[in-house]
Amino acid sequence: MSSEVANSAVEQPRRPTELRGKVAVVTGAASGIGLAIALEAARLGMDVALADLGEDKLAEAKAAVEARGVKAIAVKTDVSNAEQVQELARRAEAELGPPWLVVNNAGITKIALGWDHTDRDWHRMLDINVGGVINGLQSFLPGLRERESGYIVNTASAAGLVTIPAASAYVASKHAVVGLSETLYRELVATKSGVGMSVLCPALVKTNILTVKPAPGAEPASGIESPHALEPSEVARQVFAAVLARRFWILTHADLMRPFILARAQQMVDQVNPDHHSADPDAAAMSTKLTGVDFS
Image (cartoon, rainbow, N blue to C red):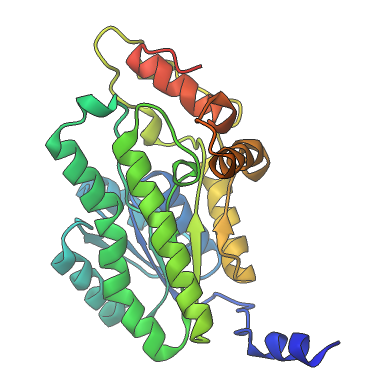
């Protein structure tokens, strides 16, 4: 083994072999991927701070986590509000202990043609999907860096790697999350930080993100299905496999997305206009069904 390889191996932060007893904080934890991550954290023996807006569902999620034999708190949190995320951080540490895992997961979407997005749509999408991640980083990263230990997972989307028609605000927000996460990862590695970082880029998952109100004259959303849609619990398992391996990219549908990601990159460097080869057909079909516009 060369000295360069040996030195790089020595400099790598030690991978945690055990998460039991550590504290996880999950936003958007009342349902879907967030709830699945909270439940998987509990299964692995982590105490969990759950954050979301809906108090009733949040209480149900807390009970489900506690049923796995760990401690949990539920904190009503609007992630677009920096003060509320700071309060989440304060309560998590005061009631459970210093957070080790922070999952900035809360997010929203809207399927609509770009010119049908209102000013409010744009602001809500960016304030929650991007601002929520930024507020999570600002509130938790200083403590993780001070302790030289911990991990951050930012939930983006396959829409942060390729585009989805009729989702311009969502696509813009998820590309932003991918970009800021990769930049931060590089900074943590360069400074030899003990804090790890991953970005989660799921394609279709069986969550309420699929129950979107259709445009007038389009088909109802209830019929949207895909043979590739994963259960949230499978996404959660992939998240923790990546955390334990300190792997940055978490593509839940890597094999499915590979040709579209590669085609998009090739179109970029060849300066060729985007076409259907660089778009996820499942997402295009969903957009077609909800808008009545043929994106095939």
